[in-house]
Length: 300
Image (cartoon, rainbow, N blue to C red; front, side):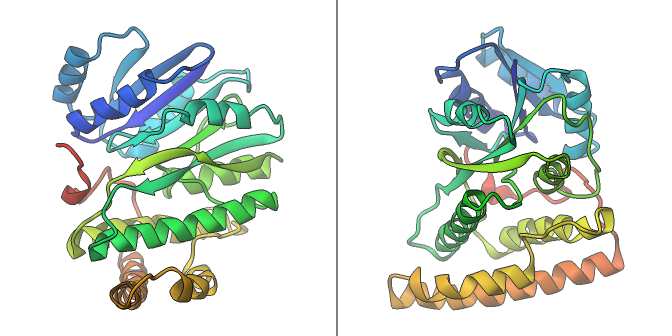
């Protein structure tokens, strides 16, 4: 059984597109799609527009994404680790081959987690769109290298999958795409990056939204060591500096893009400073989108 879980937050039109991007695929075996959202009006909209028995809606209690996923892990749990969960978001959509690529990767019994490739839908011709392409290219390079070397790396919350029957829950105080792969890694499973399974992402298009989204992500990752002291970090300020020099000189195609790259490096330094300061003043908590990122809503 394949359970596809789409977590969303009051984005009915884009969530509908996310659901249809799975329903339109040729998927071998039994599968079910569950949208998790705290807004009853989203349930009403989706059920009006989706007439498919494989679609289901779960009204989230509004305690955070991690809390909602834990509930469904237990409700949909299976003792058969041939069954899988595929996790994604309502404000993105996947390529038509994504499920088949993920299923193929799980044919290796040693693989516990599989993650897809985020692809920016933003234009490279403006600064924030360029930043999204730059950062996704760097993440792609890092994940590909670590996957080929069979080393640990963190998955993408935009699209990743795990075997059922291995873990029933996970800590709430950090990002699920980091802690879940680590829990599998501790149990002896490997992680695989499947770049052909693409997930299309609309990124922030202004400074306020960009900073809010990135600070929230960094705070979640920086809290990892408070949960697991020996967590092998792949997302950190040090790793960004170490891996970033190559892209600084090779990725820009013009003087303008080089200028945007310089700005991005200073922006990344500032957001780490801001995230560290906020963590010092207040511990991280998984409030479901404490601040909504309006510019990442592609259709709503």
